[in-house]
Length: 168
Image 1: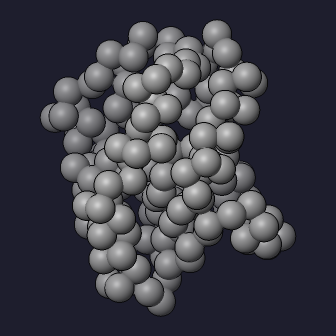
Image 2: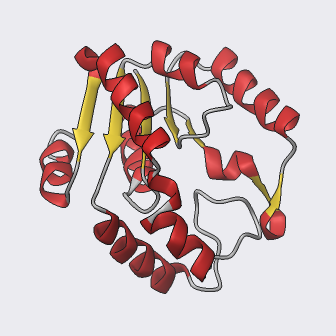
């Protein structure tokens, strides 16, 4: 099984990836771990591409979580048996981000790069509420849905997520 999880920040992509990875007993690639080096330093584009390509080339089954359109996005969508879009409302995502911050404050989440302690600042809040939801991004999700409608599930709220999780 190959599962691609994409969607808005704070929607629960990483948590869902861990659950599905455990259920299917497959390796998980969290793109935030690929993107960030310790202390929120950003890895080079070439290194991120190399890590992603190696993962795709060496795993016959996987869960990959995150958007990162420059990291073999089309290949991931094409190869995935299932695409899950986590498209929660912006304020639901913000609430989840605040809850996550409270849980991991001064700690590194399991899906984040080492030494990247959880933070919540104005820039990230703006990303969750606005920058991460541009028309370009929304159009990209619509394109994926149009191209891969037979293998795409859209999750817009907790009730829908709970219904999905009943299977896992």
